[in-house]
Length: 373
Image (cartoon, rainbow, N blue to C red; front, side):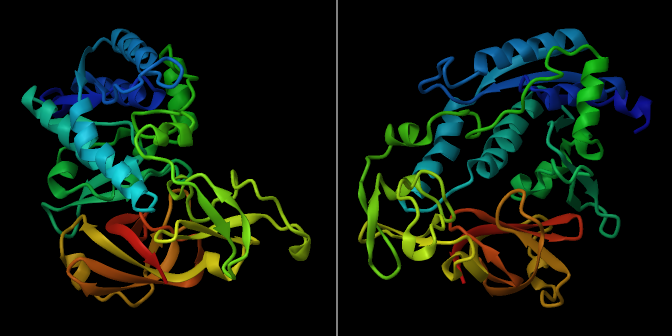
């Protein structure tokens, strides 16, 4: 971007205390933007040093802002997070599905509550440390596209598919053309305190913590039987909400002589009978699906995505993060439901997760998986 043009633009950067957002702010400052950092605190329940690093993250964010030479503000979106994200998170688990809170968190907090606050501060645009890219559609001026990052191993477009045109038009992703190692190198060269800081993991804004213990604070445990598809009792579960399709660890039932000790995997949940259904072997037929149904659809460019021919295998979809793109066909069943058929069977398609559709490196949008086929 032309330096003089950048100097006229005010950008508010979501500074998390991590290396990615820090380098984002640094790059924009170097490009001549008027940069302000915004640290978001979005979780207060059991916010202790044991599980949540928000205090240290704020210290790191303030240190980086001081090093770069920008102002920083801390803002608390805990009420918005609990209302817009965490309540959905709990209701989905209670219904036996496996939600992805990062996706809703991006749409409702990082690119809504944060964006609104930044605009109230007089910002022209916002920026985050996500590995993705946004551009104006070269064939349709005025419409914006979400693209994959150049670093395929770090691409986060999957988590951003619910962003809309208004959000994308006001967003910068400066790291989209960088490799992760290059980002850390930039941070080291600039003397940033978090250049080697470990990437955050765990539930969005809540952090890493024992999952069953955490969830049991909000939803009652309902133990039940673990059975095979044939009805054979093989163990007991702690509550269906604690398990997800394809899960192997934590079942505590071992292998069996009849099947040469192959590991067990969660294949389904019988919510009415409170039974966890398990199978043995990674390639068991009940773990493989030809397709899926998805609803709660969101197409980044609007309904025109629905109306185009969808049966020529130029599209691909992911049913979970870090999964390779799988060629697919898409059939619209209604205004808010599609059937996605894959060229090859997909493993552990999980209700509650998102199916995200791509055309080459362009993220078209997607929906919430309701059922495997």
